[in-house]
Amino acid sequence: QVQVVESGGGLVQPGGSLRLSCTASKLGSNYALTWYRQAPGKQRELVALITHYERRDYADVVKGRFTISRDDAKNTMSLQMNALRPEDTALYYCNAAATYYDRMPLLSWGQGTKVTVSS
Image 1 (cartoon, rainbow, N blue to C red):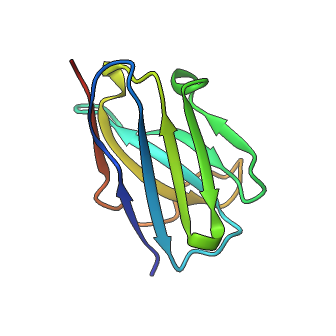
Image 2: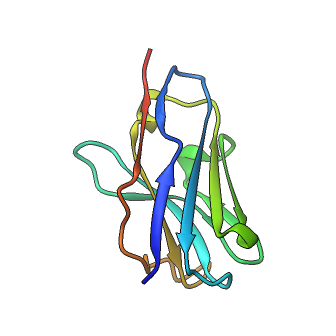
């Protein structure tokens, strides 16, 4: 069974940056990889996606600020978050999807990594 482990969250001031990482053991390289987030009292939402051929997509609210990347040799992916805003505060989770268009989460959810943007 594939397990995911997210890391890199923390407390950052508005306008600051964080880099999240995700390790997905035993996951082949032919899947799209995704980052989700869930803010308190809100539903989990898809933030970013990268296919195995590195086609990317982002939620409108993070376009131009977040960058998703992957390293299949290391079974890892990252989310570089710049110009953070208080509304980016959430638990961030990684997952996988079948394709760019079929985005249903395929993996069990990990513990997530908490991002807090506050002055």
